[in-house]
Length: 277
Image (tube, rainbow, N blue to C red):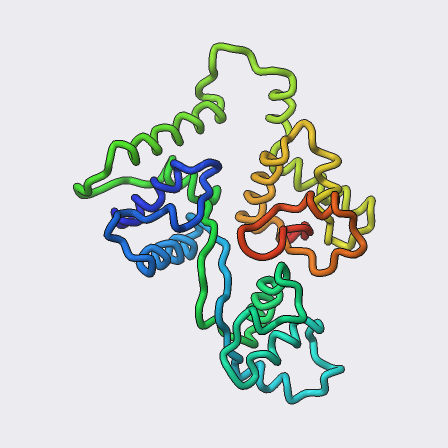
């Protein structure tokens, strides 16, 4: 790992939940935004971090042009996806061009069409970045530093705090006070137990592997806090055990149910859970 990549990660370790806007993660004062963003993309490819991205400009691909020549009624697209494809048929488009789609839904629509290979993102902005489970394991167990880079004491302090939390949570170290019954219950509810609960609720409620998050919150809060359950879901997503997706049409849900989703810095809140395995 390059020294500049390590500094990027050590900056991230100093943020709450190991999550932060990318603007807070410049390895050095001299690091340009483009270089910082490339560091993030490279670390994402290796599974060490993940991030929220916002497509600012997009253009149509050859596959998209071919699809637009087909009968509209036969297109394998939603109406919103068709609008996104049509918007860039003759020019480079921006999210603002999708005026008939809710602003909170535009990114998910654009990126769904991008995933299908029908459009290409011309300009992308990175929002929030977070350290994955794989990244935590890599820093704690696998990374072997070499060379003589200059690392500030504050960055070293971030790493020491990270390791202390792991020791405290992993059973190798315990504070003098006894754990409360609630804390003991939390430890029993591991990621696999949450995943099993998702499966059970999906079967009980017949949600066709598209479980709204508010059902899971009703079942597991308490003992989990809202943030703790969010972190479990993020870990399961990073491990490719589940997929989290946004809500496209909210008329059938109450405001309270919608608020139970996981807010994102860009785009709509994550609302549905789909089990992959």
